[in-house]
Image (cartoon, rainbow, N blue to C red; front, side, top):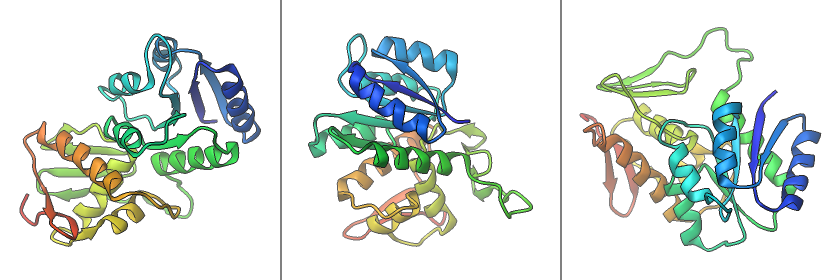
Amino acid sequence: MPKILIADDDPHIRNVIRFALARDGLVVVEAADGAAALALIAREAPDLVILDVMMPELDGTELCRRLRRDSDVPVIFLSSRGEEVDRVLGLELGGDDYMTKPFSPRELVARVRALLRRREGRVTDAPRAPAPLRRGALSLDADRFEARWNAAPIPLTVTEFRLLQAMAAHPGRVFTRDTLMGAAHAEPRIVADRTIDSHVRHLRAKLAALGAAPIETVHGLGYRYRDDP
């Protein structure tokens, strides 16, 4: 069964989340501060991490920054602050989702399940895994959740992978922000334009680190993957 790490210094919040996740059949491990969470991640290899932004020892944003150096495990931020700048910061650091306290435990479980489905996929009626998508130096293997540029791995979050996959599948096509959000999330969701911009900016930075710049901005419309990246 999928294993979920909860990192929050409030024992009541941890109890609420643990009960909701366990009732849904998920395995739960807990940490009361960021340092303990980092150690648990290395030892337990969770399938998803729920991070409180404000924690002692090591706050959630710094923990996510360190985690993203070598891991693409999905991260959901929890925070008592709901300002857009905080949500954008969490996404820019590599978070996949952001919920503001107080939150609905049922909604949190639904978001956890959605991220797990998108990361691992479901082998149901498909007899064969889809072939990797290749566009010049780019290779995307959705079955293995691997992205490479000239064979060098690109450490993408689930959302970043889906955005890149959608654009690379149709080079030259202009994708609006709404279309990109639809490609990244199976369920309908209302988000600010800056949220998509943050995902794309983070994606571009990871590609630029490998000397790649295949994503173009189409001012007033959205983004596209170049025909000749």
